[in-house]
Amino acid sequence: MEQLEVKDLTKRYVAYGNVTNALNSVSLNVKEGEMVAIMGPSGSGKTTMLNILGCLDNPTLGEYKLQGKSVETMNAKELAKIRNQSIGFVFQQFALIAEYSIYENLELPLLYWNLHNKKHKYSKSEMRSKIFNILEALGIKEHYTKYPSQLSGGQQQRVAIARALLVEPDIIIADEPTGALDQKTGAEVMKLLVDVNKKGKTVIIVTHDEKIAAYCNRRIDIMDGKIQSDKVLVNS
Ligand SMILES: Nc1ncnc2c1ncn2[C@@H]1O[C@H](COP(=O)(O)OP(=O)(O)OP(=O)(O)O)[C@@H](O)[C@H]1O
Image (tube, rainbow, N blue to C red; front, side, top):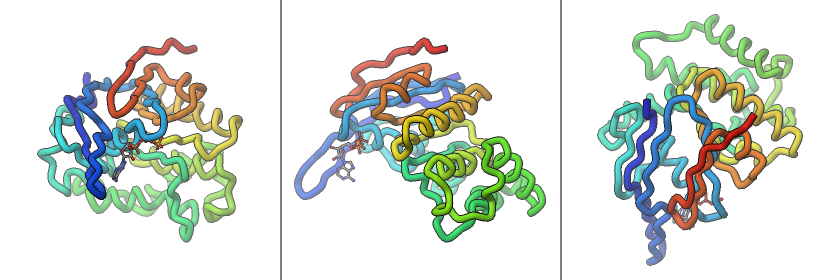
């Protein structure tokens, strides 16, 4: 099934009299369970694309359908629900809240879930077991009382991945997830994302790094806001 459908998407920025077409009539579909790398030089439109795919921004023109539903027709409440429940975000700089412990950082998406979900609300004890299960799975359980600054970059990114996975979203969107990490730690983080993908989640990653793209099974190259190539990758 097509999970994401993008048709003739254009994003135009107007700043100080300059017009930039960050995306220029881009079309692409992503199926459930794909692992896609979006590559391209600086300024080519990768982040703009991720922001639209993640429903963090709107296109100027064109259509974006998520799980069969046009994003344009969704109201603010529906969009907030999608960002909380259908999509997990992972960023280059981890985006953890410095004043919150690891446990509190992980509690947040579940608290948001409770705000947005009428059918099922997590109790404190359900939250606790979900948080500890995921911390254990990602090998960072012993750090739950610490603050982000007390962890290494790789550990912080694991927490960020745990946070993205907690509400079991269908899609993980990652913007340069290994950009702030050394090569070895970056490879460990990528292996985690491959595992997540093997469990059936769609993973979309923006990266500059060929080695990171090689973990994916599809590679889309963007240049000047247009898709230059879209290839299936055969990997082990
Ligand atoms: N808010 C904005 N206002 C004006 N122009 C913008 C804005 N955001 C992005 N742009 C422009 O749109 C183009 C695409 O930017 P985008 O951030 O999507 O590129 P990118 O491929 O992610 O780059 P990088 O790899 O450096 O992060 C660039 O020319 C950029 O200057």
